[in-house]
Length: 374
Image (cartoon, rainbow, N blue to C red):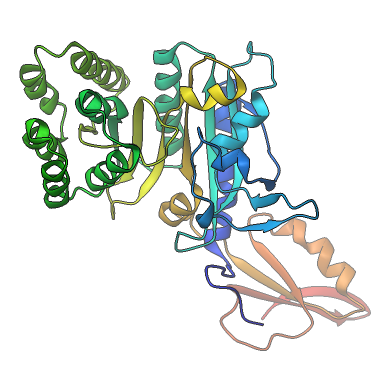
């Protein structure tokens, strides 16, 4: 039968790589004292669409249950984990998860993720631990060609704060900034009469690159304490990464949040081969306000599908086949231990040449069975 749009079957190397990525992640986070957590695949839509989480219902796979409530396949891990750990004792701060999310606004409906959430911890500690865990995980997977990008939601929000924009106006401007549409940004600020910040916002779109950009904006914002605080925060994180050997760090001062609940530092990891985003995350303290909690919360998620595509595949092991029969199958099975490094298949007949590196056959000679290579 055919599959729904966005669904696909898979075979071979990608599956093996994903399994390896999953087990490697489990080992890395366990050694860093993260506690595993899992949430149901089916949740109430309100977990993700409430005023604070703010996700769009139309992008979710959804249905009405027998009580008339809207249920969805999990579209996001952070909001789901927040719901789960809001009930946990705050003494435990570090959580890890693995599993799929389901969205219909991407190329594939199902995306596999592995991620971490750090709650109730010192802000800088949580952010540092997120980034350093990402570095260790990627390096353990032998993925070393990547760039870490840092941004901050507070830059855009501080600049527009004095102008009391309506929610729809602010969102339109945010989308234009997110899409790096300087023409659209200019149009919106002119229509809203925000000429005082037009040049500043348009310049921010191109405020992207190495840490030297921070020095430039230290001079431009020398009299704006809130913006200087953000720049100092970014510099502190970059310094930490450089101290641990990470030199490929860039900043995007014009980046705005792509999820409503982000409210501070944002980070992404780009693979230099092709530019795919292999992880993303940030701070989301305000997400916990729905649970009447004032706390710190930060996390990131790895795109396991992307990682699996870029992992170096281990050299294939030799593939051997032992030709047997119902009568000699048990003998063939006992011979596996004599080929411990090979992939061993047992067949009664081989239909295609070239499928195996070695081909053995069990024959009977002088009332005894022996193995010969064909």
